[in-house]
Length: 257
Image 1 (spheres, rainbow, N blue to C red):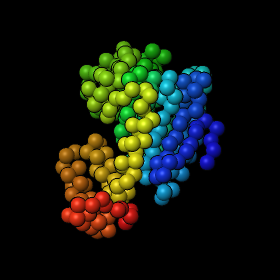
Image 2: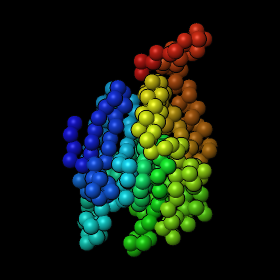
Image 3: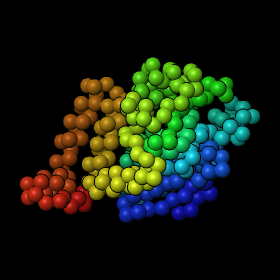
Image 4: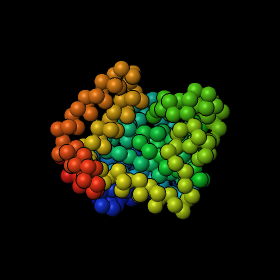
């Protein structure tokens, strides 16, 4: 697969997607957003891909929407182009998504990172929703996901004052899963992806679905969803293999069935 605004490669069961507009800090143009939606759909359809890493450059994961491209657009243009809906394909992806971020993670870039399941940040990462400074507000979940991730007070501070949050504060507040030196970001992300990809894909997908249910619904609904998926797992060959391997004190060999 080749794309105009992305780099794509696979390593075993892992897909690595790299935003590739480095000259403009990976600003999210219409073309890049469309490429991202397309590549994620193809990853979803490919049974050989079990986990996806989404990354950028050392200087920026993404500094947000391309302001030069968006500045003069009318409401009808923005609405009809469905840029936000295309971005939501990141959040809708069923397979595990790891955001490996360095440098600026701003605006739409921060929103994309929050749509991913795990954020691994280098020590240089800076997170922010600075839309207030350009006369607008977050439009792809920035206010909604951020407040759930870091709490009302931190989210208000970031969105109303355009304050940036560094990687270590982001880890303390729960926005980021782990922080590593810049030189170790790729290696650490790959290590996490390989661990996830080695497990049963149906089980991994069900775990992700259950965790998203907890994030988006009530406790009662979440518990019901979890219980149903837990019972369903006993219909899988992988469940039998996993428990047999545990009792035999050997590594499990999952087949995705």
